Length: 268
Ligand SMILES: [Zn+2]
Image (cartoon, rainbow, N blue to C red; front, side, top):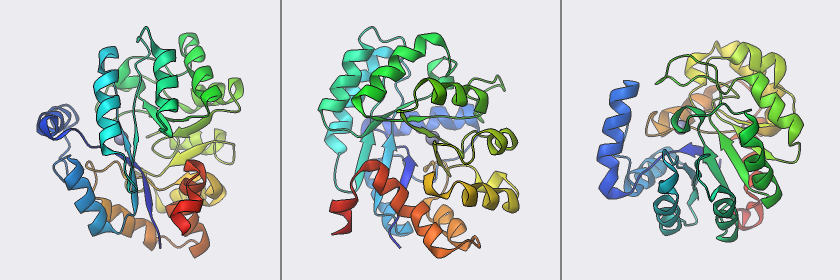
């Protein structure tokens, strides 16, 4: 079974150690590899993952260029990087267009690391530019384990974005909203929104996890959040779930391939 991991994080070699240590100390969570490109490829080979989407987060506006340039340098058949823009970036619109014209598939934004509520009015022009460019927006959804529980990216807010921008290719991470899954199930499941499986299966009753991914199966993307989880474990846990094999392979591969619009080259 081919596998795309739609939610991974790595850092430039010279920053990886420091970045992992700082996230480890705020989040109280241990990385499963060294956070480098080489470490990720190793992990993918181990887990049977063909392709990883690498999500970056610009925690300051000025980080755009360094993330963008590094993302260009790691792009390959197996590594699909999503750069990032910061909402306070004065050139945010140009930068989104730059991401598009370089050939990237999408970008990542994070309300907790970047200090915004996802449905704030000031975000709307940004979403509009992303939607018009045809880029995929991966957004952290739900609470974040490293932050106080102030609701910045909950299901009602996601619904508001979906209503304003029905054409936006939106991926809500962590099964639509970390630790807000009861509301996600009522509000978002079955609607026109991609969700990834990262950091969800271990936190949910198996029955609820199965119910949610079955009802939403055409738009569920396998994701791990590695190095914060072990890619191989996440693959094996999802493989064990008692759902039809064709739905499993949609979640592991086809939904992501379709979204990334790379189906033709990958299937050859
Ligand atoms: Zn993540």
